[in-house]
Length: 443
Image: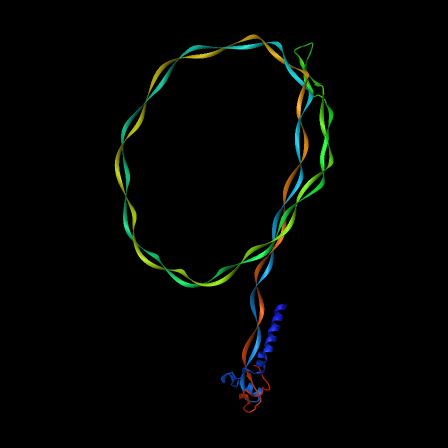
């Protein structure tokens, strides 16, 4: 806004120095060039104001302000993300296994059998047969046929055609063209250069102290009591009678190794990448749109409907009944009886009881302890140094130039005619050497 006000003040100063605006205000310079018709009296107001008839026509120049659009460049900063590789060392712990032997007292159960005798009464079934004779009366069926006449009413269909007239509205299409003024934009490109900063990674080696995990193995012993089992014990007086007794098995001692960790300090060498900023000139292309006027012929279609009379054949069906006499075979059944003698064997079952001595095996369990050497996998941790590269994202601002359209106020000088009245001074108003009128009024 300050720049616009300074520009307006400078324009007014130039006009005052050149004498154009002052001459217009005083009525000089443009009076003699006015036509006679433009200097005619404009009514009683001019006569009352001047006290005499108007002597001439003048031109007054005014300064007006108009808005004007102009294009300038503006710096816009874009945020870009770049990835920086960083190399560092980290501890990787691996779990390894070693074989360890230990002794276990394992109970071994054995099932034994003893023989017991007992007597069973077993039924014995026997199937016998006897002959039975009977008379059977059996029907005998026979199918016969007789002729029967009947009348059938059969329809007979016939297809006929008749002519039917109908009206059809048929569209008639016509293609016309009209001129359309279009504004297209043409792209103009310009190559510019800008200063771009980029980062280069430089390796830097340094020493630092890290904590390393280590330790030692300690052997611990634990006693595990034996399980309680049920054992079958036979009565000495009655060997066939057994009862269950709960007996606890002997325990076992288990040895295990326990890892006691501890931390020691160790000095390692670490290499890391340090960013370094460099500059380079990068070309970029600036595009702007330029309007281009062109005339295009655009087709459009008009549609008119025309009535047209058409004829078509419409089918219709007629039906007439036809009588016909037919003959068919009607079946009927006759029955006669026949007697027959049949002999069959009828089974019957006899039962008798037989005593039998049987033997069965009665199981009982015997337990004894057995030592067994087992092997198990014992885990332990191993630490090793591994170098890895990580990528770190960083945001930076990159400047670029953008074309922006702005509006400003510009002064412009406008000339308009005015009526001039002066005191009567003979023929001085028509003479170019006449003195300046005493008063100038701008209408």
